[in-house]
Amino acid sequence: MEKLIEVKDLRIEFASGKKIVKAVNGVSFSLEKGKTIGLVGETGAGKTTTALGIMNLVPAPAGRIRGGEVLFKGEDLLTKTQQEMRQTRGNRISMIFQDPMTSLNPVFTVGDQIAEGLHLHTKLSALEATVKAQDMMERVGIPAARYNEYPHQFSGGMKQRVIIAIALACSPELLIADEPTTALDVTIQAQVLDMMRNIRNKLNTSMIMITHDLGVVKEICDQVAVMYAGQIIESGSLKQIYKNPQHPYTEGLFKSLPKINENTERLIPIKGIMPDPTNLPEGCSFASRCPIADKSCVNIRQLSKEIEKGHFIRCMKRS
Amino acid sequence: MQELVRVENLKKYFKTPLGMLHAVDDVSFSIKQNTTLGVVGESGCGKSTLGRTALHLLKSTDGKIFFEGKDVTNVNKRQLRQLRRNMQIIFQDPFSSLNPRMCVKDIIIEPLKIYKVCKSKGELEDKAVELMSTVGLSTRLALSYPHELDGGRRQRIGVARALALNPKFIICDEPVSALDVSIQAQILNLMQDLQKERDLTYLFITHNLSVVKHISDEILVMYLGKVIEYAKTEDLFARPLHPYTQALLSAIPVPDYDYVQKRVLLKGEISSPIEPQKCCRFAGRCPAAQEICFKQEPKMVDMGIRHLTACHFAGQVNLL
Image 1: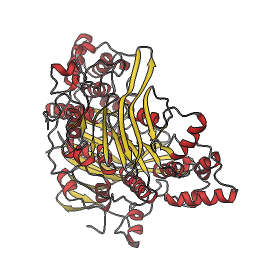
Image 2 (image 1 turned 45 degrees about the horizontal axis):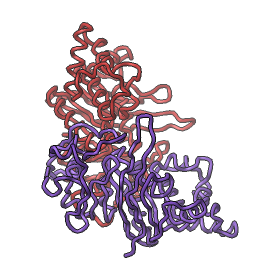
Image 3 (image 1 turned 180 degrees about the horizontal axis):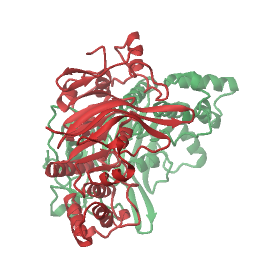
């Protein structure tokens, strides 16, 4: 299978006063056409920053990409000018942001907002774009008759559908979804995930799904990459990560969740908190919270090693 | 076990330009001492309003609230002040529920100052140290300000503040929703330990069904201001009776590779709580709805040992 996107050793920093926040520290992964990868991790793990890096949207001047490559069909997106990127964003790569309440423009009708990308990126006439936008609305489960309504007339779940319609209007090859269902209730989340799955399968879109919810990942992803302190600490197929998690952090994440399908008397939390991104340790950034770490973990840089085909971890104790 | 809190036919309506908004409509429950009642439901179902009304933070429209067997529905200001010592609340957002201009120690001892519990400054200091160690906060943080701390530690401050007056009853309004899972587990464990040690009674409001299953003895499922199912935790998860509960349980994404789930996808979204019609409020979205559901409001019926549900076809519907 051909690789649609390949991220190699991506590094992103933010300047914060005199300190430097190391948000993304050498993230590498690749994704084949039609597949979905889940980027999981807790607040501050660098998931969203990685996505912004791929889109070349890291807010300057505070933030800057320090190194790495983002190869999209072999072309490095990081070497492109902003003007060239504008041809790509919304057309070949789209992004869905977390909060459906604030990512729509309140003074334009939802139909016009869906058609906007079509006007910019395709040669369709105004009428054709309207028809296409209406078609997109139907696909995401909104009656086309609501074309001329404004965002405030829609509920949260419906707004998120509008955003998905905008993102998919130009049939992008890659869709980056940043916590697309986090703000929604579970029954609505189930509807939206179901719809996203159907559309993805129909259009053969590749997806990068950013979430902190391991349940959502299981619903929609083929591959999983677990992020911690700006690094991917474990990656593999859905089955490898869920059936055989190897990194102590991944294990800890699964253990700390209350289970709906079994009874647990007491949860097993991960002790401590994530290290300060302005002051990351030389070695393993999880060492201070890790139950199996020893002195050497703190000092030695952890490299990503393949422990079975396609299953990588960054832990010298387990590889 | 003794009953600590009982609420009977509690109603809370809000006036809106379009009519009365029925936020909490005819809700009854009771909580035994040293147990946890979980309240679940989706946004806008009235679960937070229920908590606040039970605590007298909002004045109830109708209904009765009993605390330790006494009717406290219409207490005067002075009585309410005494009542509040025994009823505390932990809020959802540890970022906005703490005063940014007060240091950790001052936030924790504020309730003690208000109720003039401690005689001297030294006693206050001692009490602050004691509370901080109870909730697992290092005392070196006593003079830190909330913005310097992470979400988990901030929520520990919220817990310490709620415990300061040694209350009997704590309303926990989504106390772990804003936290990451590894931290969420720390706080849930802390709350369970404190419950055992201090004989606490919780009303635990959340939208997260896995959390509510883990922490509750009994569960109340709400939909549009109404209780639609009320049962022991094991019973509710083993045999959900109301079609909404069934759909809700089936919609949770379970992070287990081998777990196969039958999914009931509900159509549409929650309807308006303003001037709701006299019918089953879930009827419009219910896959099993029949004519009667749109005409008549279902009554709460007991379908076993304290397993109550409000559905015309209770026990006959199984969507799963």
